[in-house]
Length: 169
Image (cartoon, rainbow, N blue to C red):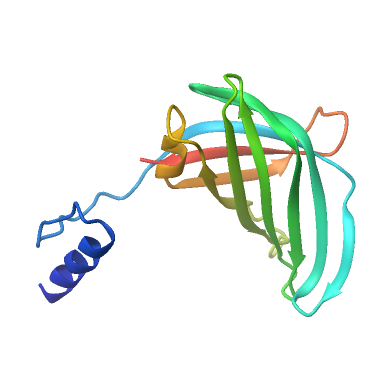
């Protein structure tokens, strides 16, 4: 009971509309496909070893995205900041813009860790994207939690990745 009251009090501080002293148990989230991207990449720019690990940056040069109710292009000019750690995993943090077919610009910051296979088994690449969309048609992107999958794209003229985004429902 004390934990519920503490949780309710904490929730009321950050969510003033939450007034109930009792917090009902929430169902476990499920994932629903939101949209997918093919992101084209420029040549990597090696920065070298830093106190935090080996740094690399990759320019984002364009691409496309599409899903139910959303479609457009990736605006050239973003970057994927990569840091290879002592454990062999590479932290990634991509920061770029989407432009929908109806002219809305949306910022994406997509972070994750890519780790080498363990015991011969490949590890899936998962990301935690955060979207900043203007108030309006696409504001739901900034009001939802997402999980992304990341893999090398095939059938593209140059280097590219394929990203699928799933929203928690």
